[in-house]
Image (tube, rainbow, N blue to C red; front, side):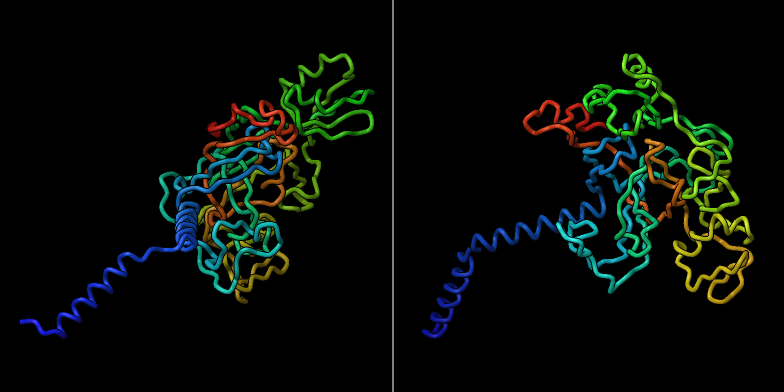
Amino acid sequence: MNSLKDIKLASLFSFTKKGKQQRKKSPVREWIDAIVFAVVVATFVRWLIFTPYKIPTPSMEKTLLVGDYLIVSKLHYGAKTPQTPLQIPLASNFIWGTKIPSYLTWIQLPVYRLPGFSEIKNNDVVVFHFPDELEFPSDGRTPYIKRCIAIPGDTLQIKEKLPYINNMAQPIPPRMQTSYLVKTQQNIKDRVFWRYDITDVQRLNGGYIIQTSEDKVKKLQELPFIDEIQELKHEAGAAEPDAFPKSEELHWNADFMGPIYIPKRGDKIAINHETLAIYKDVIKNHEHNEEVEIKGDELYIEGKLIREYTFKLDYYFMMGDNRHNSLDSRYWGFVPSDHIIGKAVFTWWSVNEHESWFNLSDKIRWDRIFKAIK
């Protein structure tokens, strides 16, 4: 037989349990829980599966246009672990609307890459961190997008703007652009060039420099106010001061370069005057070596003279499809494998920044929505 004390304790326990079951979260708490959950899921998706990217410059026109919004797959090549794990979720390199870094460098970890279902291939369109921003950790550097011209183990040579891989000419991207000088005595309005889908235009005295393709040049030449159109290109042996690897002895330029061997992990090279001219920046800045010192034609790592060097990473050579208006590997060299973000797979949205939102039919590029990138 239950005592009065047992009955009272049972009633109190039942009341307390019932009260807990009926207690509801406040609307504010529900919103906070939903936002936290969404941020966690979005952060996981961006790190492991895909990330969005917007085209900010014309370096890939007309394959990709300024105002294109892309989906970049991280499943293709495999997601990489962060070097700086203390980051604000969903932020880029800086906190929104400021120049304050969105990460802290208190903890920096080695970068590892998860397995992907494909390797980077020649002519893939790839998003990567700009390797020349040495003041930032690798995952805090600006994202760039270019076409991968050469992969580890390739020997690249550029002749008359055309890349050759292992002595074989490579296919020209179908929308590749290059520079032309348009000579005219008239002031040509922008809309005339836009009519021919020419948006990269620079005005000069007595003409214009445009970035376009050969088929569009033929149409422009038919206009009565165009006097002449000349293709602009570098000559073989005419050194371009900013061209990789910035050696006065090589006399390379953006249209004539190489041959260049693209390093592969495990490759060994003899250290001498010629190899240091091309690979010294890679060894010093991207191979995670300590105390690298170059004295003349000699390489020292942690005070030890190195006569033969073994590469620790794979490297890639990237070029923009807008060949004469692209800052790419022809100027700053190789892209290390631990800088690769992912493969650009399709555009999910595209807007023309030259048009008004009051003209939606031209503002939104409907034909580019969900378009595969080739």
